[in-house]
Image 1 (cartoon, rainbow, N blue to C red):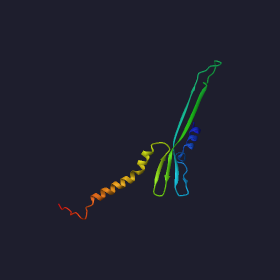
Image 2 (cartoon, rainbow, N blue to C red):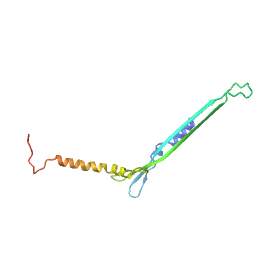
Image 3 (cartoon, rainbow, N blue to C red):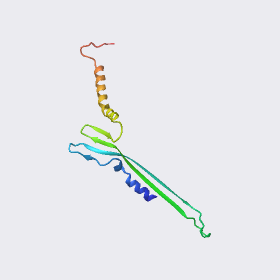
Image 4 (tube, rainbow, N blue to C red):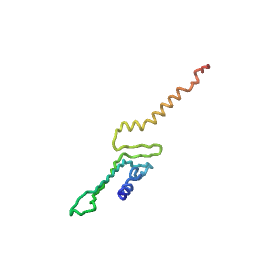
Amino acid sequence: MKTAMQSIKEMVDVNTVVGDAVETNDGTVIIPISQVACGFAAGGGEYDVHANGNSSELPFAGGSGAGVSVKPVGFLVVRMNDVRLLSTNGNPLAERMVDLAPQVMDKIEAIMQKRSRPHDDQPQRVL
């Protein structure tokens, strides 16, 4: 069991989840991201079987099994001033909205700041 667990630990490391980065000619870095799941089961038992009637030891039976699943989730694309997660499955419209959210927030913040500043042509109120 210890050997099997050690083998699974070696298979499922951080390099399996976050793959090796690939750099393109224009400087873009692409990093594959995967979902990794593993499972392990073991069992056994002793059975009372008397073949000749004088057996003092019980026979033993056991077994174990393991499984590893690696499922690609997407690619992390890093450009000069931009980082995006391109999903292998999902809703492209929702992903685009998430990508645009920081730009929309910047525009809303700029509008709010513009409205909160007093205009030079209007007299300021003194309380």
